[in-house]
Image 1: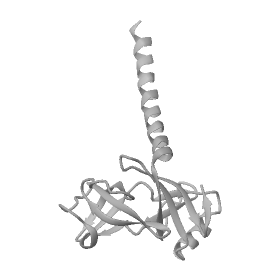
Image 2: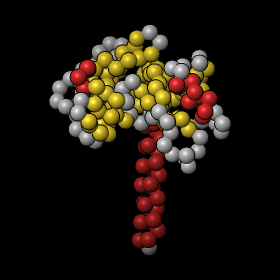
Image 3: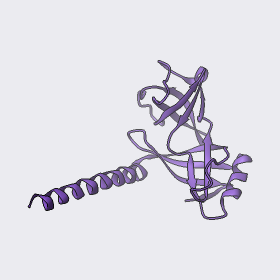
Image 4: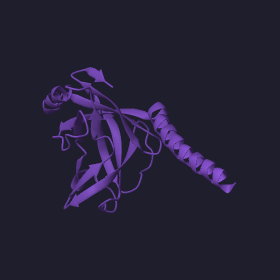
Length: 174
């Protein structure tokens, strides 16, 4: 008699976890601040995951001597990046290990320090890959190399970032 109850409880917990992950992601996309970031070229490393474009950003290799505030980051630790609009894109204006004070017109995006090499932190924000239709990858990679690609990113209130679209030569690709 206890087995059906245990099984139902186990299924309910799994469904609840999946539902909360989906709702959190949807909330960030729906309510998050949309920012546009300039994309820099990076060669894809994994050919077995389907057609995708590997993306890098100006802040992917963060120079700590330029905008870092407070204690130095640690490998695997959090990095908070303050983004502010400048022309057609948002640019990083400060970086720190903890979230900074809110500022009008700015957002704080949360990521991680994957590796610290001297005064350069290699960062990850979860927006480094964009999956595309079959055959579209090389065209987008070529546009990235020419500097004509921007990423539309939704930044949630908690700093999580979700890549929502690429803007390639003025064309929005979802």
